[in-house]
Image 1 (cartoon, rainbow, N blue to C red):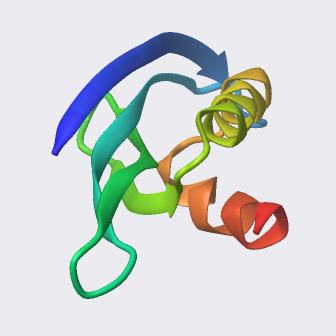
Image 2 (tube, rainbow, N blue to C red; image 1 turned 135 degrees about the horizontal axis):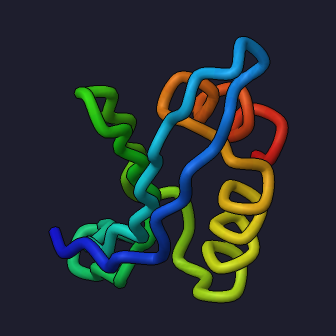
Length: 90
């Protein structure tokens, strides 16, 4: 699986604590049948200090993973909030 760096961002939480998040698009393969595999995309978010969330194989659509990544970066979603955002997005 490959990781493509999308962006790093620093954000303040409600308590005034500074966090640094790094966003990646992950690229892998998803089986679409017994003999057919296609490129698939997922997301990974890391936080300086140890937090990591990685969800592979979310979509095979480049435009959809791009829109999701823009949403995550714009809203400064950290590793802890990724699953909640994905539940709404899917």
